[in-house]
Length: 631
Image (cartoon, rainbow, N blue to C red):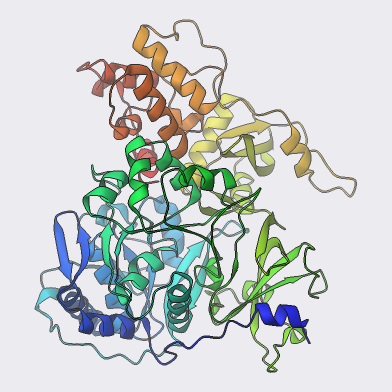
């Protein structure tokens, strides 16, 4: 039996509609508030009745194409009312949706489409060109086709039950191939109840206005788009490609709730208007990566509402623990388990550890997913049944091995301590370093590759690849970067490539990653300016100096792409704030993405008509620019 103290902390039993699916929950809410505004997307507004009827029509069409319980249906479109209607339609038809991030390279989208074996893929005319239509043989359907509008809007019946799949989300895989996590309806419906309790939502609570900013390819979008719509919220869909910023939307729509990664929160604090707008929120949810205590203190200068730190892997259905954050010390706890969830911290022999002692974190309960799509070996490795972890009622449930290190605090809260393996979190993205390493070692001439996450400046984390290769130097680094860019999401491409004669080894002959991390910071920039590559005027000097500070490099060439030097969303936000201060005027944030060299940005800022001619963007670079802008 487990210690009484651990049993007490894990007594999280709560009733929830165990016989209901997500579609049932939404239909019930649409029946209660048919005329309330459900979605706002640009200048489009949909009431609950309109969204319900629109998704019913599409669901009926999907059923005519053979979609039934546990059928996987791809969703490939930008954040819009069509996206939300498509997700609901798939669930109503009985199927499970597989979100595809259009920002990913086509090669990676092809891998996901082929692995999922989806018979149907929903898209829109706007998004169709960004999908590898030849992959997997899926039937491509325009979710906005006029013929679908002729279908009946009456409620749709399916044979789906809570044990059927709701979605399959692909995450980074250590073998070089992404893996699909299978999450059932029952997992999600239980999660909804967990959020009701954690966020204080219940009968008599007035729904608020939620700004949805997360890509549907990340499971935290389920809270933004589905929990909200089963609870009567008005959901504002942030258009990542539109001109309106998050800060402007917070004010325009009177947003009350916002969920984001700590990286995005930090980015918003660098924009004075967005920072001030955060003060009007009622609840702010932070998760997806460790929350720095300094960030909480900074947010508290403008925000007096509730801040919740959220923790949980995709395999246990979005968030598994929550912590209402008050006064913070040196760290921010990840809190306690949500409804019907159990947390265990175990040693190498799967025995519970005493309070205060660090071990590996395991999660049990109704949020534990079915497993990995078509990966029984990996499912058996990560989803375990341990008889010794029976509860006080004799229960014996599956638990998920997270690979995270943690410890219980005396009050039952949990302190997150990092990873036990080579998985990392970078700006909210979950990355298996082995996936990048496997692709690097397939490149001709690369004998060995090790990727690490470095933080050479506080708050500025970057991937760095160390390679033992036949060819070295700038040309080799460029070739490796280009090869990875065709296969991986932008956030998984290392900011620097360092070539070594041999990898450092530990005493037992394994790669010594600690030695790599203790090496001097790599040269992210190009070093000293080459003759003729110095700033030509004062504007170029200001732009170059600002980017040097933001990137932490000694020099920036006039025609070097900022993103090839390691720029990401946070560095762009930092450079944007400093540039406005240095020039004494407002500058559109999008300009820093569009004009991504010193010469082109300076020319644009100087009002030169030749600015557009100074930009030379390949298709890959254009995709990368869009990735940074969306991020």
